[in-house]
Image: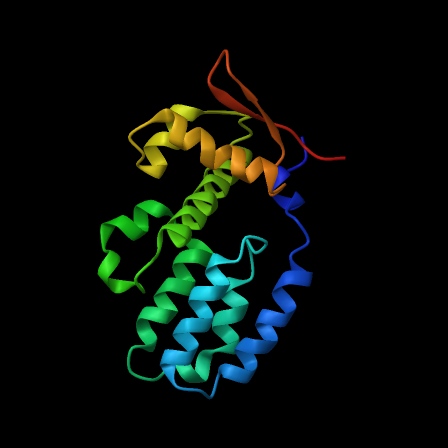
Length: 169
């Protein structure tokens, strides 16, 4: 089975202008950089490349308060919602839209682990627990949003309350 996570949308079209903006902003005040980063992490078409943005912004991240911006980009590159909840004060303040995006990225992290373990099914309860949502329906909505945005391939099975992974041809 081919790894469905390698089938992410081609985000270059959405990411390139933002990387260019990051390069132009790199010598700006950290407040300008912060605003750009908050815009980038909220973009609905971008699920990868946050580490590239961080590299482009490296000069600005050495300023005071740049550490929060840097940690936030790391969170969206390599972290999960659980990482954020452990200590939200070390990150930039996140809006509901940012948190939703982080939950989507957490879904992708769960699928990556499942794929590495050659598991073809992930239950909605597993998503619910990882996303720390009170209702299974809320977890299902995050999974469905990932399916609709075509950042993963699979089918929801209502009978088993799980996502069955599939590869794209």
